[in-house]
Length: 272
Image 1 (tube, rainbow, N blue to C red):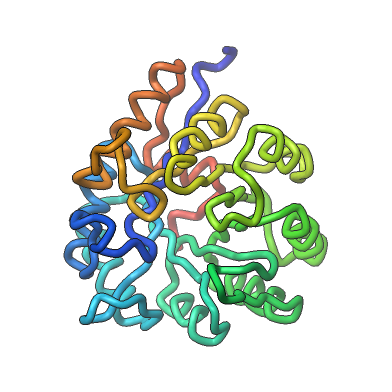
Image 2: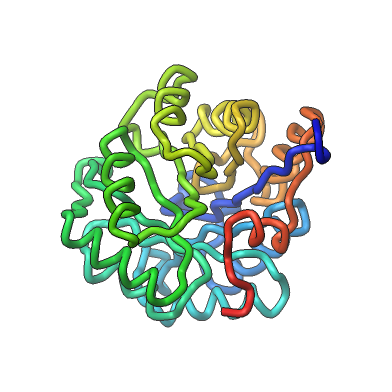
């Protein structure tokens, strides 16, 4: 390949809402999240996507808990930290923007989350996009179906999302079946020059990550997405999942981007 081998940005999704009923290895506390992030960075992850929990182990949107996890990661690693803004209540889930993470998710539409509905009205999308832009937060544009791509393009036309745009084709919410056909359909609808990754859940997680890399995208894995490193065997850490993905990438003659290289690719200003 001219100019050297293509570089893959690996995102580790550390915990999400995965419970310890599914696996005892999922991190809960800020200290555990930081330890897991640093281990995953050493295994090759450039981005840590994080959710946080309260003292009772339940998902929370409190910015002080996010700040505690983020500060601990920054003390030990230069990886990019990407905080979630997904969830049910708009004013609650936007709190994390107040700590100015380098990245945050931007769900460009409404979708079912299990039996509940995550609503992102057009005014809310514009408000969140504008705040992220003003704070210098790089959005990870979450795509649950093709209509989300349309909404993202409208935000781009209004100057609320700047290029290069980083999309996550998110099959993990089950908004669409995780298939090569659906993946390629979404990829073909993205704006020219976009960067993208794809996310599956459970048994779809590794196949989607590999398919993403093969089709010109990047890759995500972690205990948020799957708890098994192979059939019937629980992953003992996020680093174990990342290590497997990195080995696959290198077997495909792909290089793994460092956090600094990922920032350059994503257009993140390191001075902020």
